[in-house]
Image 1: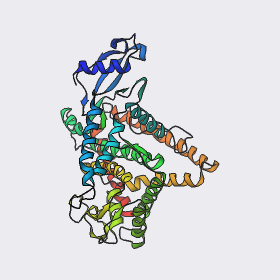
Image 2 (image 1 turned 180 degrees about the vertical axis):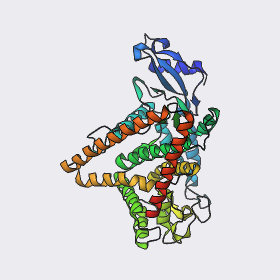
Image 3 (image 1 turned 120 degrees about the vertical axis):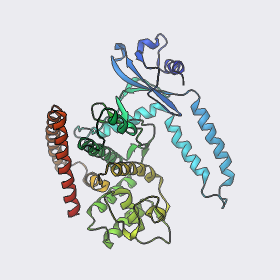
Image 4 (image 1 turned 90 degrees about the vertical axis):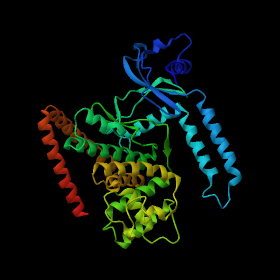
Length: 426
């Protein structure tokens, strides 16, 4: 979409009758930061009238794209409908296109996207019981009130590069992607994504449903950013509770082969709606859960392979997978993939189990006085830890590069020893 057309869309959607484009934006980059089939994003600067100077990103929907894409999907549904129930067809394509239609409908409404962005930010910025504020381990852009419509969304500008280009940018800056400092960043990245998706999925069941390296940003100040909330998912309270029980069962298992543990994990997986083929091994359901939520496992029960594409993968034993879990699975597979590429063993179930226990305890007990006192103590302790970590980070950044690298190497070695001890205890 040419810059002139993008400006015209913004003028039509956002400007008042007596306003000009320059009354709202003092700067507007004509070359988009990114472009996709539905919209493109431009950097701009707000005028003082609108709270500036403030850098913002403007997401602008392509004119007529909604009617074009939805018309294409309607045609595909019409073609697929007569083929429902035909044995030669490998699956019901009508259902597939109907689900795609429902998903895309949400992505055309930028007012809904702004609301989702705010809802996730608000949930993550408070403790589970809502009694106190807490830090979010990554940056989520905030929409600008008064500059939102169905087809245009003005939000915070996150200055950085997508994760898909992070290695390339590190090399440009002369940073070794395999250095100790890069490994520390990798751990911080995994911690941030694990906490944000774990809390969103288990605490409220409302989460960012399109995580991929293009939507995760490495910001210039070293923080992580998460963008594009056009696709979100709300899972049911029952699914959320059962997922929490799965995390606890995986975390508390005695071993990867204990029959009682495997039966409990497998039954919870089936309770989620996972269906296993009739001729599958007894351990199949538990193996699927361990494959999906515990990347530190070296050998799966039942002799299944860890590789998703292996003929002996537990994934091949799936008869059907519930839609709620498909989008949860996208988040877990992203984090698993990152940990594998970074060479950092990572167990989602161990990281998510404390969140799961808190969720189930609050569901059982409500927010009584005893629970509130524990939360307040946790808040104080968390604040002290964050303060200390912030002071240390600031001090380390002031050191010469050669000394910073040595400090980072020591931190990595210490963390690796800690991980080995955890593994031996498990």
